[in-house]
Picture (tube, helix red, strand yellow):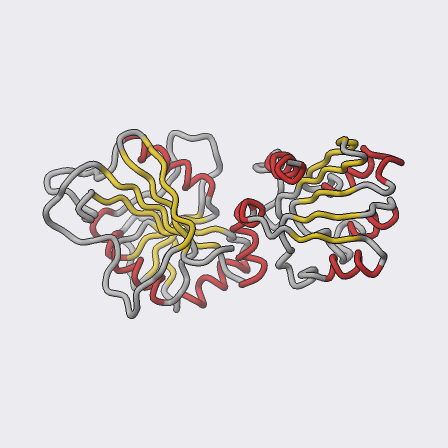
Length: 313
């Protein structure tokens, strides 16, 4: 329960934490009682562990620290959190996930153990999922890529005579997804067919970068950024520019290109209760089948949203 509470606390930082930093929450428990809580709230605020330890005060000595992510062991804008944990006299650290940052990646745990602190790594799926975009960005040097598609019950991405496949609630969810993403992209086939804006509309949020992958030219007046290089190179360049998350809204060809190159992390499939009877499926031909993990479903209006991972963060 204390780790679940730490995950709840970490979520308080969503929206205020800078994109280059993970969400982190921490809880200090002594004699079965919560004596300190903290979370990272963003630039110039203390790290979650430090906040929780300060709240606990002397009661942190001999206590257990529950934290969603491995405490950092390197000097950044603040001193290493492991130093604060050791100085506070914490006896045991229970961590939800290991930090994939090459500057940490197990080194925080090693420092704690060397100081005599007991360390338990839970490897919680919820803890890893909470920072999925950051984990891929920091460890793989590319954005976390999500492919979003709407399709009919018979697996078609178009419906004859209709502009939309999915319902209004699903379309609103897509605008929320755009607002949550650093960048949104389509392929040039979609650009030529629809000339999409890719803006987040009807939600209060900053706009994502809007991209088109493929060979130009873009239509006159298009506000999309054209990316013509190899996908791996373009993603690395975007990561270097601070793009942690990329939402793909392209058609079957772009989806197959990304999937075939092993560059898709997550799928969001809106399934509408309609039969099309004709048209393309959500993915063009692949060199090999792709197995998915962590499949879940939820109702969104009249549609079903299926979420699955190509690889876990």
